[in-house]
Image 1 (cartoon, rainbow over the protein chains, first blue to last red):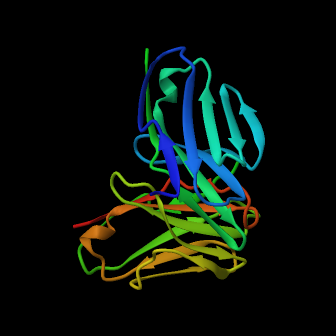
Image 2: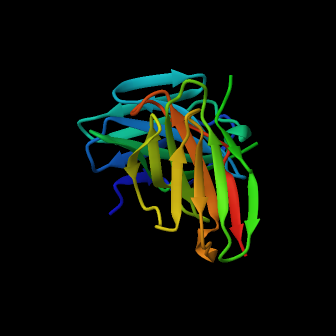
Length: 110
Length: 112
């Protein structure tokens, strides 16, 4: 079982829809990253959070440390949001490497 | 704002050759991380440096070595290249260990 599980693996939506991507992890963490990767490879950091909720534009990320679960929400989705969204956790202690989920491929159709 | 710079962006090598990948972190970031992403795979941690010292090591083959220099840039040296080394190699930097990591555009290495 992977330490970081994402669902769904693939998601297709119509422009304007509300999107939710989920991430569950099985290890203790100090923080969780949500990353965006476009075709061609570049990775962009969207959020890093260790508690509560963060919002940036149409993106909202929440985390529940007790339940070891995080969600990424996209409001009013747009075709340019089409990308792979990756959840990655920082285990903490003296270990600062990221452990990645398998990613969720989001396709937003016009 | 300045971002993480990686060079080269693309590299094609033959089997058994060597390759050197470079990473220039965001100014004032003293921590650098290297990740390898194989085709269709999620990124895997290779190695990290903090203040020019190796701080953590992941699934990095013995054929690979890396270091961080006095100006905080880092180089990943890969020798005796194998077909399986073909991947996207990302460098990330953070202001300090445990802080948010910012990724470079990656170097796509193809081994023929």
